[in-house]
Length: 162
Image (cartoon, rainbow, N blue to C red; front, side, top):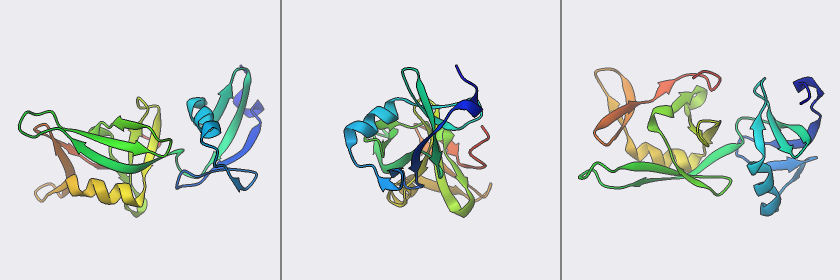
């Protein structure tokens, strides 16, 4: 495996809305994007890379490669089987751990996805959907999501910290 500095650029950029570009042109072929998402990794320095067989190249990612497009609350409060699911820009759906939610500057909401391997930024639509489930604890002055009888407080932090 080559050192991080030896990895060439892919000439691929992902903007903050999760749109992929190659040499400035938007990439729209879903089957190609699917292959790239399936082979997306992070190197030891935190850069995003695509690794296909023995080839690797790094991406220019404005914020995160994954963006939350929609939010669904599933289950029932009565039987304690509630879950929050998200639809990501790679067209996959997954249950999120509400304990991984955090807010950064400009009130941008994030969570961990893909078995905590990546971060996802909430789109405006996803944000407005999840705020329906967020409550305010006036005693602590903090926001939380109540799920299955437990309160998950939303922290203020930087994506680089866990």
